[in-house]
Amino acid sequence: MWLLSTSHFELVHFNKPEDVVAGSSPDNKPGYAILSHVWARDGTEQSFANIERLFAQGITTYEDPRVSDKIRGCVRAAREHGFGWVWDDTCCIDKRSSAELEEAINSMFSWYAKAGICLAYLADVPDDCLPEDPNSAFRRSAWFKRGWTLQELVAPHCLIFLSENWRYLGTKVGLADLLQEITGIESDVLTFHRALQHVSVARRMSWASQRETSRVEDRAYSLLGIFDVSMATIYGEGANAFRRLQMEIMNRHPDHTLFAWGEMWAPGDNGSMSTMAPLNGRNGKTVPQNRSRPLKLGGRFTPPLSEKSNSPFASSPSDFQYAAMSPISLEDTVKRVREWLNITLSDSATAYEHLITSSGVRFQFIVVSGQPFSLAILLCQNDANQCVALPLWPQNEHRPQHYRVGAVKEGTLYRVFPICGTTLHSLRESGWRPQTDSDSAAVSIGRTPNHPNHRNRSCSPLTGSLRNFISNPDYSIYRHGRSSTSHFTGSSWTVTLPSIRRSRRRRHSA
Image 1 (cartoon, rainbow, N blue to C red):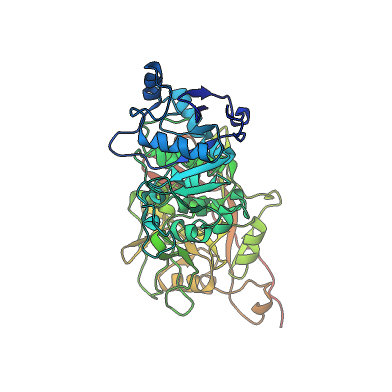
Image 2 (image 1 turned 90 degrees about the horizontal axis):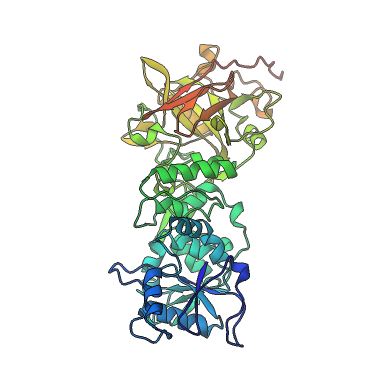
């Protein structure tokens, strides 16, 4: 990594952050300061090549008028806080080298985390701003809307906010509650009372859902450190970068919240809007953590036709805006849905995971066959502690084994369904029928025979079983072993579901 000296105009290279020693001044602390900012849109940022050129011209001080105001202010602020070195992404990365650029992008989260102090420069916030005022410029700052500044907020242990003239505004720790209100990032994460790896994939994606980047690829690359993954940077690949990111996340995090994106159909028990705890959104606004719709009995679901229904992968972080999900284990999932579902697992089904193999990405889902769509249960729960499922809809009657993800009702594509009695009853009223061994079972949705409240009831449980799916590197999904399979070719996701046998179980006597 390249660092600017704060004592004289010079760029010096260090192999890694741990190699950075105290500067030349006896008052310097060991380590380095690091700048977080929003790039100017007028092209006035000075690059690595610009700094090299100025150094060759004999410049030795940052007070030279040919040095930009931002670099001068950054160096002064770092020096005032006792650091002999400072890193600025505009001029400390030689972007003429693709290898150096890729190394910097993959290492940036670590560089911010290991910095002695992070200087968050908010050029659009005046010196006299009071951050906590309801309509403050601090709340509206562009710094909170950029993709790259997400990791620059989360990673550093010591971060201070500075105004347009480099005046102190506050610290990340001191403003943690306000930052949660602005960004949606929980204050215990910002203050390191909760480890980042203990936050679900979907929740972390939601932090980036309303942030913007100049290049579409950077919406993925700016999240590498947030998920502790590394991957090649290929500018020009467009939205494919975010698909690759999701595959890397699957390889590292066995977390099914990655698939729980999009609109959730979550009817309330009384037929009104579900009551979910609010998530503090941008600029102090609140949004539901899992957006839901009023329960309207009757009315039919129709198959999804949009491009989003073609793939198990989201197209961008924006798809996770309302994805407030947390992962749970296979055992917990089976326990939580046993009131409505009888899940049959083989003795070898000791894990429920998705991983990268030599054949591609392997998925495992609990599949409940039904008409006109089936349900693939995920190992995660919403904020109401309900398990959720993806509706798998056959493409058409000529290809009954080919499926899309989601179901449309009243013009809205719902991609996630909660598993609860209210939902299953409403699905039945909307024309959905589980695939079972008898018509009487198909119209009886109740508790399983071994449930203590099942006595003297004549209903039968729905049945599901654990099935494997494989998605290879070109995003096609094909058959694996004897399990149900799905196939993704071109723009369609197709699934082959087996016949599911309902376990023969004796009812409890009264």
